[in-house]
Image (cartoon, rainbow, N blue to C red):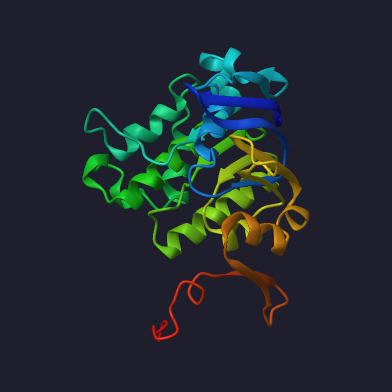
Length: 268
């Protein structure tokens, strides 16, 4: 399966947000969606899952319009992890993960596997609202993992924003495993270092070059999209690549020196 965005335009009332954006999230690859605050990342993901209908253009999931997919057809093709999940009742962790199978056949083994892979076995019977926000994010991801078919599409909106570093690393490793197993992974990220290390492809939302209203998008292989000059122009800070002794390259952002006055002290 794949996710294809074709000439998608979206506006909230008279406020344009997306301006004729195009991109493909391919099967077996991780696509990172990046961009400044209010550039339209969450809006685009909501168009992808069919929760919003574009003003023009189309979003295709497995060759079908996302807005036309309902019930089992949608559940078989796509699993979604929002930034925050608000529950109206005190469901337990296990019950929330089981909801991932609600529109599909019940598979207790998959629920158990999701609990284990997201390090939730010890809190499986606790009510989700009693957990930390980071734990709740892991529950939401576990629910999507329980739902996801091997070649399905997984769409995530900042899934690790509140997680500690150990669990964030574990979650990103899981996304890599799912993609290597044939899933299509589309994930919105604020941390560009993580995006550079994790993603095969990148969708970059930013203000249109001609100054028109709404964000345009550059999409392609990560190395081509995440050029240092382009990132500086979009985010307003400098970037550099650091070569580690193990041969890996790490993208670093200069988020400290530029905003400080000559008399201010930087980090110790």
